Image (cartoon, helix red, strand yellow):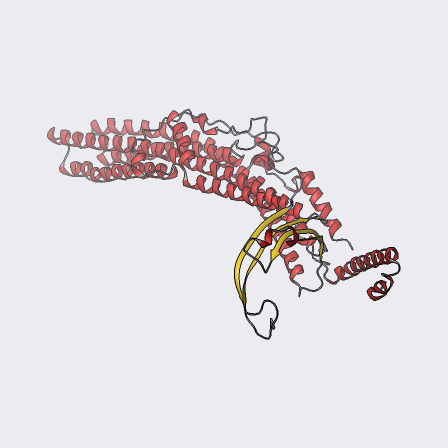
Length: 521
């Protein structure tokens, strides 16, 4: 009913006019809602859908190395490096985990992600703020104010208000935003675990190399001593009239190079100690206290847990992080989709206001003012902004899926690579052992033949050179076995997560179903 008719009826039929006014208000509200529903279709999201598809386990074909090693074996423990039986290594890993700057930065990222999730969760709750303004104001006499009561006066212009708002979240956008933030917090937490695992792996690899450098130093020292003995032997033969100066020069020539090789090994030991100190977040001086490693791991034929590759999805931190990232980006699409729908908030305002009077006039009862009611917003035209936001969200989802796929492929490749390397090193161990035995026997025979004058000094030098090559190969294979075994444990997740650490597949499938429903028109 038009307002002017209601005003005409008011003096005679006050009850009827009230009823008609209420009807008119109801019709107006219904009209607004109807128009809102129609206008909401002006900005639509049709045609913007994700394109990427997650790789599933049946689609991944494992190779022969994984099949041959997939026997019943335990998954790595969370302190897998203790299998090396070196207390110094155990203490240094613990020291590095506590003092590493990289882990401290990862922990800061986790705290930030949790704080962001808290911010998004707070948006689901009612919001209230209070304001107070006390101003002494001079009112001019001009065309704007006119020659009224306030003209050319000084008054207290005071205001105090309590504002309350509550977003009804009709379409679940705020809840989706909160869930996205929680998933991103889980990504950060899982990446912190991945950083810890990488740090542990770097410590163990460097420690293994340090053990190899000490073994190389033993070989270099033995080589130097042996060359000195050969020089003594050449001098002795010369004194006995059996040798000559050329043999002495041949025996003396390799000694400076042996000293140089020994110095190189000492340098490598010092650099490895510095690297360990840096990984622990300490200065170079801390590395000087590291003694010679005592690793005692027996590397047998490689074995894998029978649940591979299924449980690998929940045990490798990088894979779990990528799965949580996919879940977060799925929620991000839902958040962007909600922007296309009308939004309804409840707003309330309570305050006191005064322009005239003394400084405290505004707190009087008759200065009270309030407002209460819903606030509706709906998109009509935005120049493609919301479609652009949804396109970004779907692209982020596709990117997260492809990153997950790549991480999964790389994870299986890493497991297979380490198995192949361990198998090869296991075979090489036998070959090197046989080659070392042969080189030692040849060197002894060359020495005896030289002492009896049956051969020249060059045969002794050649046999000696081959012996030290075989000894270095033995240490190289041994260090390779230790490092590769550590790499396999890391490739299997390093025990830092349980099999169910990642988002359940049914939860991700629920995200997909919900997304498909959103895209239907």
